[in-house]
Amino acid sequence: MSERKMARGLRRFDTVLIANRGEIAERVKRACLAMNMGAVAIASEADAAEASALEDGGPLCIGPATASKSYLNQAAVLLAARASGAGAVHPGYGFLSENADFAEALERAGLVFIGPPASAIRIMGDKIAAKRAMQQAGVPCVPGPGEPLTDDVEVTCRVAEEIGYPVIIKAAGGGGGRGMRVVRNSAEIADAVSITREEARRAFGKPELYMEKFLEKPRHVEFQVLCDEYGNAVWVGHRDCSLQRRHQKVVEEAPAPGIDAALAAATGARCAEACRQIGYRGVGTFEFLYENGAFFFIEMNTRLQVEHPVTEATAGVDLVQEQLWVAQGETIDPASFDRPASGHAFECRINAEDPETFAASPGRITLARFPVGTGIRVDTHVHDGYRVPAYYDSLIAKLIVHAPTRTEAILLMRKALAETRIDGISTNLPLHVKIFNDPDFVAGTVDIHHLEKRLKEGFCANA
Image (cartoon, rainbow, N blue to C red):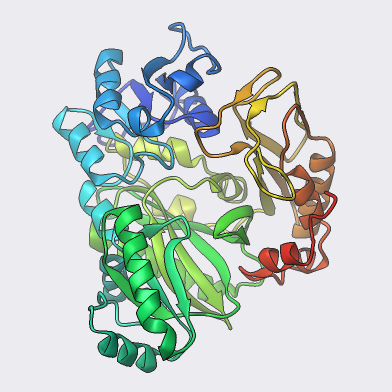
């Protein structure tokens, strides 16, 4: 274990099964090793040959390449955990990370789920229930009733008129940018409800919908929280994730530029209070739309975020190690997190995809070279000769920089991107180069629609 002393140590474990793949699996492994814990990797058949070998000879193969038969197969992951002798399971992000049934299955098996209680996952995984909980905790929410829509079109039209057009119809169990439609007048309501309800049923197994005001030019700002099970909850900085394509984040930064410190502190405090009210444990992220100097809650992610490194850099905290400590029953000291952000950080998500068409680009990486130096961090699992499989998310690396000021961080990222080279497949590196030379982005004035507009203007032509 690290030098930090266990205050209570209710659930001591010395080995963690990492129920994920790729860069996040490597990230969790590093945290485990830093805390003197064992780390057990799993892999699908597609990943097994490429996965980094551990001291025991390699990862445990848990099934075929298809995620539903491997990384999403709860029985297979549970069997691997038992066979490995692990005392806890870290789900990373994606896959089973926000699956309440999986968390309960681990608990029944006597294993620790490194994440929040199943009850909190269920509340925050249902957008309607989450909005109610946030309203009760005083967290500012997007205008809307926070109730499921009925099948009565006339009633739905009245709700929309009360909110004021444009409105957005969303799936209660949605995520990842799916299950939502913008409606600008009453004539569009019936079709929007019908299409979104069917999409929600097919994608999430839940046909429930709700409606909110559609904000025209918001930014996407999120607050990192950390909680133990004894009522101690803190917010650990905020991030801006407005650079998105099809609701998928491309670049993130911390802290979010241009946010009033007093407003941020008040909003962060409300997030921490919400965590206490729902009995949250571990790390989590409150996502907001920010427009005209006001925050509007949209959802909470009950897991580690892909963009957690920018908060780690500016807050001086290892969020994965904090997850491991809290999962063992450790307390957190709120006073130790009561400090301003240090410097500025950016993260570029490097994907195996064509920089113009964004089509996935699986295949063999013939050369992988990443920058090194002060203020530069690379989270990746790829290397020379690594074959990118076609079955999973296209993320292959995260390039993170940290510098004293936002301007210096932009200059450092430009340098880091210039020194990054990945041959054999296509990547979105050219897109990142253009982003960090885009005047509006450099000025910190972009909203969530900015990148889509740039792309329609031919931003990546001849990239």
